[in-house]
Length: 180
Length: 180
Image (cartoon, rainbow over all chains, first blue to last red; front, top):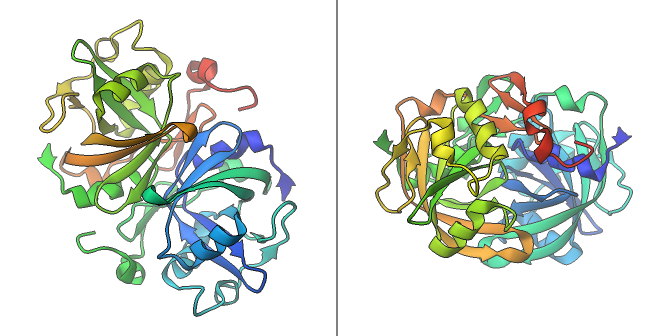
């Protein structure tokens, strides 16, 4: 991976990809799948919606840092596994066989197999709205990331990528509210 | 268009499409192009990032309502026109020839040519982070919207849809910060 200018971080997130967000409590690294994210400004500020129902949230609250990793489409099943298991009861790096990538500015590792790793600090928790404001402090990306297909979650257990729709409804069932 | 359950609104936004957001100050309807949005919860809560630099923002602040319309891919050039012109100096419905669709619960109109119209009320302005929290109060969608290609802005003047990348860098140039 090569360093990526913080000014280009918005172009990774604006299109709306599924991301994998790593945290570390000093004992264990954890990772969660998030598709509720948005850019909030040029210069690397992002928002993510999550909350206390997520095991990573407690670590994020205590450590105030994470890595937002952007998976390519071929990591769909890892993203679904990460999104449907809990770090409270398993080691998600171990079960997905993803490779930690040491970060430069934060303790949580990036993910070597991803297209990009955005090292972030928490700016603020807006708990009433389940929003966390993040600021990118370093970013790295693989060569050719601009042309790679990312994953877009529809939110009903299907995912869009490169003009195709991939169905993971069965695997996602337990995580979807009724009616979706 | 048919009524769409508020519970399914998240599936329109989670994938990260470009949206067209209409407002009305009672004298004039306006519309802006927004690609900084995210779902913040099941049940129709959304967040959008924008601010006072946007002409629609003043109206939104005063009226606290809007329609989030989701364009299909063939509305790319209308979305670019809307995103690069200002309602302060032109009538964006007139220049794009888009058709107003009367709303049920809010004053701003929807857009007939779009795949879906999500009528929203503002829950809160989080001005420090340029975030507006919205709550969907009604939604309508065309038949077949689930399978339609939406637009995903990369943020550098290019757009992704159905596996294709469409280049509108020249038209977007004036709106992009240096380096993108």
